[in-house]
Length: 68
Image (cartoon, rainbow, N blue to C red; front, side):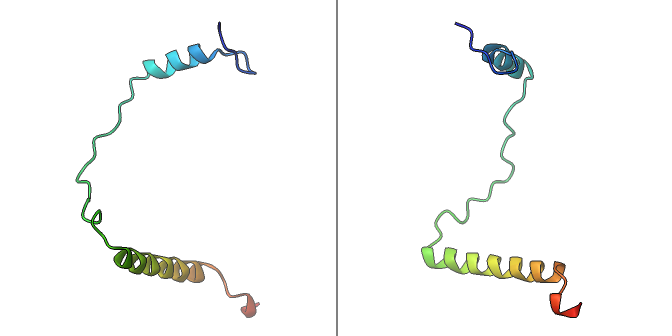
């Protein structure tokens, strides 16, 4: 049984095309596993710092509405 998509291309044909592309998963380069043993407290502290940096960047890129 050949499965068809709404545009008429069979799923098998699509899979065949994708397999022929020859793409390979990239090798991890210098993967950083240092945080795997991180405690919950360390994680929460790091997340809080990251969220604060995002807020600062967003505030800098958004014009103050009161200045209009």
